[in-house]
Figure 1 (cartoon, rainbow, N blue to C red):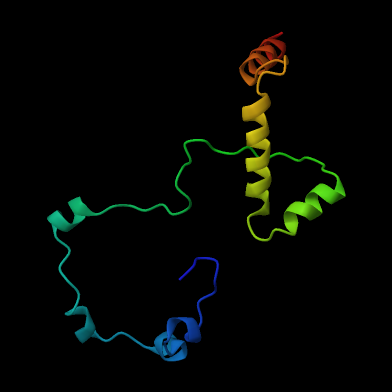
Figure 2 (figure 1 turned 45 degrees about the horizontal axis):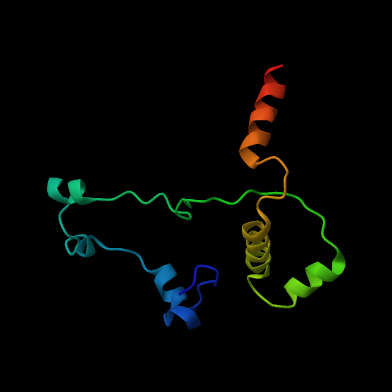
Length: 115
């Protein structure tokens, strides 16, 4: 099941109200497996969330013309990723336009911050 969908009795094919009202009795604890040192050594802590991307994106506020946004939004879910791909392709084709590289800009910003 997708994480974006809410769990319901229909999607889980379960009687959630019965599950919610169930009270565990002592006999049910006997059914649980023993917690051994070996089991604890094999345990993996999952902190949740998305895995770290090797090339993380930057959150940025940008203004685009209405027709550009409407064009990409009309393409449906994932429109921002498609817009990103179009811009990345442009950078691949026109990468050397004579302006400073992002590394050069970072260096200038660091020097300015230290001054």
